[in-house]
Length: 243
Image (cartoon, rainbow, N blue to C red):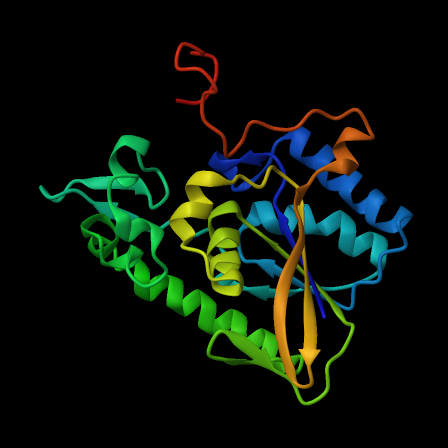
């Protein structure tokens, strides 16, 4: 089985939609998938408008419909400071802070840190993973510890249109990597496609392997520049970039 995890296009957060650039990106993605004769069997989309708007051109191109899944919405839960004041989304951490705490590097301990416990993010991430696993189980792959059991493997392709933060939670679950490392050390640019395949080297035992992360070739080949959404300033003095 193959998974395509697709981040939404350049966002208009105020209107939970896409900017004009984001609409161009979504159209170019659909055209590229069609041009490559992609075979996508099932489509799943976040309940947020910007993900739905990104999926729309692809669904129209393929003559398909998507199942709307609330668990695919952005992992935008707040956390809180010691004085009770609210912090931004979970992955907005300063390097000088999180890199000094070894727990953030651990799959078993990242959610036991004070900032993550303040928003109960361990349980929220676990809930995303439970629902994602239920989806995979409906396609014949059942989570067993750190791998998946299958009575009869298949070569279906599932496409998930979602968001940067929740994509990292899903990849964390599939690959056994702390989501903090993915939130801080990677960024899937807008309309990027991340691809994972199952490998069933032992009968009935499958593991997902990532063959491509954050591919935006459909933008590059069309001359459409990548969005800066999801990134922070490359150099501190770059005041025109997100700080």
